[in-house]
Image (cartoon, rainbow, N blue to C red; front, side, top):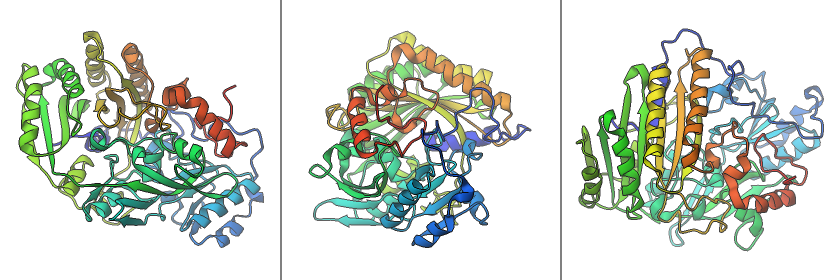
Length: 525
C-alpha cells in the first residue's frame, strides 16, 4: 500500500480511534495551538447585537450563513478538527468578486474581524475567526487559454478539481498533493509540488492575481500593475494583504510520468535517510522524491520509505534509482516502479488511489466524498546543507521515540526534496525566500476522535522536543505549514524578504485590517 502524507493522515486518524475520551477543540491541554483569532487590533470590535447581518445577507449574490441556520455546524468547520471550537458569527459564501468587496466593506464599517477561507486547511486555524469568514469556494471557474498556455482560476477551487479540469486538456499546474486544499492559500504561500523540481513552485507560475484589498478595491496585480503587491502574493502567505478572487497561471504540457515506492525495514532508516539526502542532491530536475519516516503506533509500528515522481519513462526512473538502492545495504521490502497517467498519478499522491475524483473530497464538498477531516499538529524547517551523521540519527531517533512513547497517535517526519527549478529563482525575486533548501522537513502527529488530553499533550510535547533535537541541522520554516508555536515566526517564514513584505503591508493595509496571530505586521518595531 502506498502511504504518503495524505494517506498516512487518514490512517493515523483511525489509529487512536479506540481511546475512550473524546478530545474537543477548545479544551486542549498544555501545548495546544493558540486561538487563530490572535491578538485583537487596537480598535474595539463591534458588538454582535449591533451588526446588521441581514443587510449584508441581502446585498450578496451568494449566501450568508448564521449560527441559527441548519447548515451552520458544517459550514463553520475547517479541515483540522482541533479548531471546531472556534465559531464565526457568520460565513459568507461569495459568488462573485463583488460579494467579497461587500463583505470587506461591511466588516470595516461594523468593526467585524475577517478571515479569508479557500480550502480551510490553515495549520494554525487562520481560515476561521470569531467574526466573518469570507469563503471563496464558489469562485471556482477555470478558463484555459490553450494558445497562450495560461489558466485563469477561481480562488476557491480545490486542487483535485483543478487537476481534473487542466488534466483533461493535457495541461498541469505544479501544486500540492492534498486534494481538498484550496488554490489560494497554496499559491499565496509558495506551493510545493511533485513537479516543483521540474517547473518550480505554484507561485512561480503566477502571472496575475485579482485581490480585494482592505479599502474594498479589486486590484489586478502583475509585473506591471501593483508590482509590489504582486511580488508579495508570490510566497507572502495567505490572508495578509487581502482576499484573492482569482489567479492567472502559466500551465505546462503533461509529460510522461512514472512513479516509484521503495520501502525498507525500520532498522535501515538511518542508512536510507542519509542515502536519500545524498542521492536527491544530485538528482535531475525531472525527478522529485521524498523520504518518509513514519510511526503508525500500535496500528503498525515504524516505516521508512522513499517515494517519488519522474517526468519521464519508467525505464529512465529505474536507472536513476540504482544509486539509491546501491547506497542502502539492506534490500527494500517493497520495490515498485511504474508508468502512470497524470490524473491517476495525482489521485495516488492525494491518497485517493482506486477512487473517483468525486470520492476524493470531503462529504461536505461533494456528496460522493469519502475523505474525512483530521486532528493534527505539525512543525517544519529546511535542510539547507548535508547534515552530519548525528543530525540524521536525530531524525530517526525522534520517530522511534514517538512510536515508543506515544503509540496511541500516528506521526513522523517527511522530507520533501527541493532543488532544481525551485532553487534557480533568486531569493528576492518573489516573497518566497527559501531558495537554497535541499529539502523541507515536516514533523507531525495525528490523533483520532477518542484521544485523551494526555495523549494529545504528549504528541505536542514530541513536536517541541523534535524541533529542539533537529534545530542544529535545520533553518527557517515553511509559511504554508504555518506554526502558531514559533516565536520568531516572521523571520523563519520570510527571512531577508520580511522588511519588504512589511512595507507592502503598510501600503495596502495600513490599519492592519487583515489581522491574525501570525499576519505580516505593518511595522518591524
